[in-house]
Structure formats: C-alpha cells, structure tokens
Length: 259
Image (tube, rainbow, N blue to C red; front, side, top):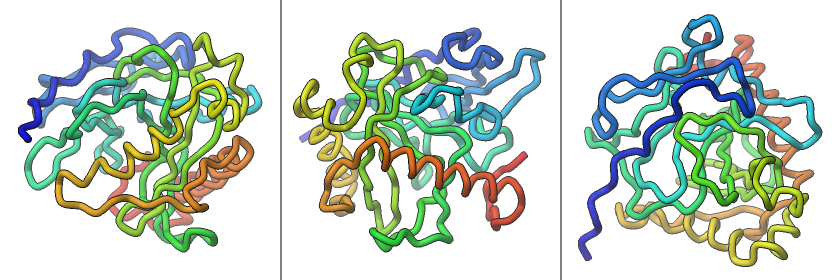
C-alpha cells in the first residue's frame, strides 16, 4: 500500500529549557525537512554546547535523569543527535542520500540520555552483542508530546534489550517526572498494571519498524522481557562509565565528535 508522505518535523523548542536544565537554549538553522536543518544548543552565555557531552545526565534525584528528546510522539521524521558532527546538533538521519522517515509515526516521545555511550568494542555477557556506538535511547510514555530539543527530567522505569543487526541497542522506558501519571509508576511492573499494552506496543513497534525497507525483524534479549528499573539504572551507569572513558581518551573515538 502507499504510505502517506512524512510530515515535517514538529517545531523545535524555542527559548530556555527551564524545567530540567535551565542553562540550555536552542536555535535552528535551515528548514525542517531539508538536509541542511540543524537544531543547535547554547548555554546561558550564548556559547554553543553539545547536547550529548554538556547536558548532565544526573539530576541529583535517585532514579531521575535528564533526557534529551529528538522525536516528538506521533511524528515520523527520524531526527537524532549527530554524534559525528561538531557540537552534535539534532539533524534528520540520512540513508543512501535520502532523508529518513519512519514508515508510520512513533507513538511515544523518543530521545537519548546525555553522557552515555553504547561501546561497540565491548560484548555484552548476556546478549553476546556489542554496543551500537550511540548514546542510550529513551522511550518516554507520558501523555504530552514533547518538543524537539526538550530536556526533561524523567523517572526510569525499565528497559528492553533490543538487538538490531547484531548490535545491542537498549531502549529505556521512562516517564517525565511532571507527567500526571508519574507518581503512580515506580517500576516496570507498574507500567504493565497501569498502562496495559504499552510495553508490548513498544517492543512490537521496534521489532517491525525496519521491515518496510526490506530489513529483518529486530530481536530482543532476556527472552524479550522488559527488565526492571534497577537493571535499567545499571545499564545507564555502565554506559555512563563507557562515555567517561570515551571522552577521557581511554577508548578509540573513531569518527565520533568529542569536545
């Protein structure tokens, strides 16, 4: 069947991101939906900063972390932090010379945890797969569509161990602390109870989303189970440690841009 044309990216967040990390503001270059589009980040002094390296991961609250959102819920353009470009702006992914869109909208806010990195040089003991060379992904299940470039405090709830083309690509499930449902969710079992169908929906969306391009189904480790909050926080701690080694020069950076 003919799929509808992808909508242009939702307008990025303007001004200061006060709710989670007040020192950062955003500005865009180029037109959304074009290869030249970039969403850049500045600190309070007006200096350009990297959303990957300069936004702090930790908030000082147990189990609550800062997350950067690249793709608002119910949109299709595949936006991501450009890990190989100077200052790591958000840009639309390009495959084979064409801007990349999902074949259908993603139903949750999608982003990444700053100051994390899935090390492609380390093979995970359980899944036997190495990291995908990117920051850790976060799927935010709250009710509000978050603007592109938003930095929000999120409560970590659990994680799925997705395996994409032989690489480990963690999908951490979280909810914005200011979401009305956040007080009722503390761990992954709460998500099953209060939000039935959400975990399976996330798993199946990510299992199938590349198949229209002729790619195989993605798989999941740990018997496809969503792992609990404690396990998710372990993953984040490990990948934060990997990021520290990366920026400290203890790991080969390859083509990644570091400060």
